[in-house]
Image (cartoon, rainbow, N blue to C red; front, side, top):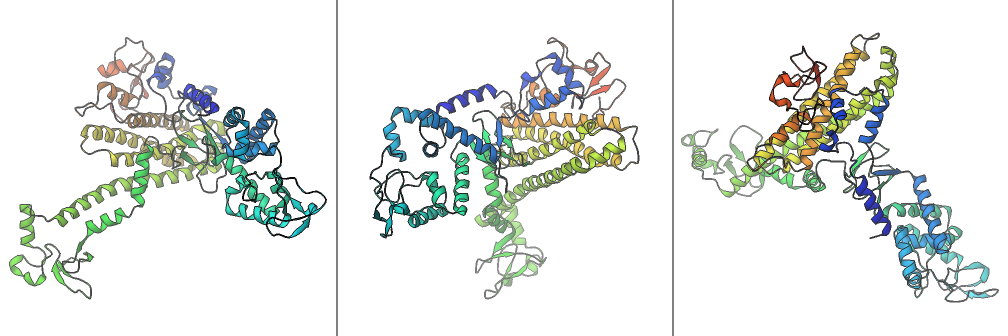
Length: 590
């Protein structure tokens, strides 16, 4: 492994404790100050809030623009040129050969410089002396040219300008392989540098070569990748081994660094690959055919029943008439079999369990298709809801915040809680969408895990719907009002509270799925610790900031009241006033 890569791994291990959106474990709740802070929703205008948000979103990657890439590329070339005392053109050839790894170039060069020069094509002296002041025959077109119309790379093999131009242009049009271009002489391996490319080619070919040169810095480096979003020119420099693979590009597209698919945490890349393949595979078409059609008993072509009558006639040239229920010839059917809309022979066989293999396969395919449809519909629905939420967020930031600021006579800095709510909605829709792919592949025989998963998923989805409705519907009241509203601050508290509660729900869900629902014991029941953390979203001790010896709040409702006279909801941890009997956020009874 490269020495630089080893240092990167060590740095990544040191920074891996700071995960992104849903990272963190029980250690995050160890301080008393943190416990108290969880009861009071954060003031969106405080500097502490910004520090907390920036800490929560601490990145383990860097987004690179084209200018950033060129700067890094030039810095690496200059570093190698200075250390090895070679030209910048030779340094760029070395770096391209060793996939832009500075440490690899240094290691190989100082281990065996002669071998590196021979392999890469950096010759110390020409193989042949370049003719000077006399006419020479071009080795490609065999025309005779004066020496001033001939060119050669470091090896000294002379070729005319026209042949060089055709050779280089063809290589550039063939693709990125032109970056490792060698001398046209079949027996020579001398590298052709960028200086000759710039001297001999057209402006169009220079531009192509330059694009290949820049892209090679990203595509040949295992620590960098292009953003996979269509039309995006940003690249990502990732700290390998630093925890979560989720990356958010400046173009607003989020993707998984490991598989370059859309960001799918907490579902692993293997499950995502299977799900995407299933969504696009022809196997689902075959399942539909098996579930919704039957083969003609005579010609075996699949037939879909689109009318109520059981009397089926196959299409020409077959024209065989048969019963849809039992697939027997229609000529054998009459009043004795139960009439046109029922077949006693079939019903009797069904009651006795006399199914043939084809019928069993059809029944299994139908059940499988119905199960797949259940999960796919919810996956697709949350995807469309997320796209709509993204559009609403964009409109909120560009239009509605300014309008709301004017109506409510408050600066836009006081309305950040609305943007944070919509960002939370977008993220939660993404997570919720992929939980349905997770649920589809969750083994059906693991009933305890499935029940726990569906409970966590249901709680998270319920919280998200409350938040989404509040941000989408209730906000319209204040957008449509003609002046400042007296209860706008109450709306602020409610929306900020719902945002915090929803985040807690989804933190529990993400943490449980990433742990493989390991909190479910072998008997299919959740441990008490898991239930406490699932509902409260925090540590096993009370969230009101009491000492380690304090009693759990599940032991009695009176012990949920803190020193300020508030009681904490067991479901969402919101601090309600003493006189309230129903939680103001999740509507659960005290």
